[in-house]
Length: 485
Image (cartoon, rainbow, N blue to C red; front, side, top):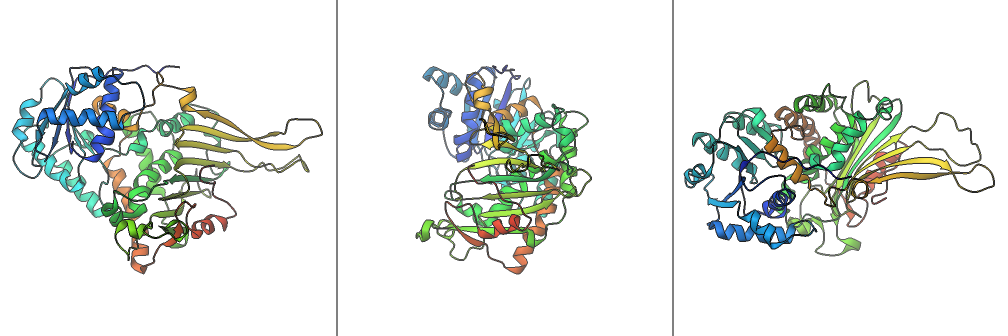
């Protein structure tokens, strides 16, 4: 099966922070790959902007280098790179000053989409938004894209929203969470709402519990300063895991439109019960087998750090659909393997007619986000062979790369999300009230351990996390899925 590429209309995209790491690793390669398959034409323009004093030709060279270094492992010719970089321009801009803005304005056209991608620190969001508005660069149809973190707590998120709405309408603001651009995340909605098989069972009567795991095998190297101020709760749970929870637990929207989908996600967040500290496990990685200079505190350069690199929580959604069905969330650094998944555990059959033939367990539906995007359904079947009825487990497995290739090419989440910005489709972007609702839930959890001064429990690098996280789920008579299972 080959996906149909639907071209987008001509656009001018201004990329602030164009010389930064995210632009080089993700944004510019993503744009190139969309150009390479023909999703946008040579009528489009990409204008890089940062404080760096570069010429347009120097930035084109940097862009070509980024594509060769961080682009997907597919056939790329020098001619394709040259054709793409011909669309690229550059203007040095002082985000908090007046220099460069007139040059950007002069390069923009009136007859195409204008989008402004802020790949910069959140402290610069209000300044850039104000300059875009005051200089007349931003039009009523322009779009502004914001990278996380969107705030450090509820108060800062509210302040950012207020500052942005002074210059842009909510329908112009695209708060990006790259997890929502993953193919499997969107397939979760298709799985639930386009199939009559699962939706009637998608409730507490049939589902025992849900596990949402985002495990990383790397540490915090390269993000030390930011991460030690934020920790796993702010960096991952409040945004990425919250989005996965919402898509798993939300009610069917009346229609598949941006506000209808986001209305249902907000309802999930508002239905979350406050989380007691007894339902939280926090950890901080230490050197493998006691190794020196390999712990979180070594990497953070802070020997007294109390910031968590791992967190697990038991979360409850207080509504009719999910009453009595817990959601277990966990995420951490320096774990055994890199894996992101949603595991939906269905209840055991009410009666086992196959006594003596083996244990009959409920089905498990696993939605894999990374590294191998796909869906697995664990079933119980008869063990093949003669000699009576013996039961065993078997998986029905679909890997997207094998079953649904896009002309043999995977699609990075940023590719899809940037094209949605150009289309004006906000379905996969967070709305302002959604961000604030998530912080309103997360802030008391963070305040709980900050008030007591509790330190996270050490765990070995390359393990599955701290012992407290095992107790969190074991005391309910359940077990975590093995990381990398």
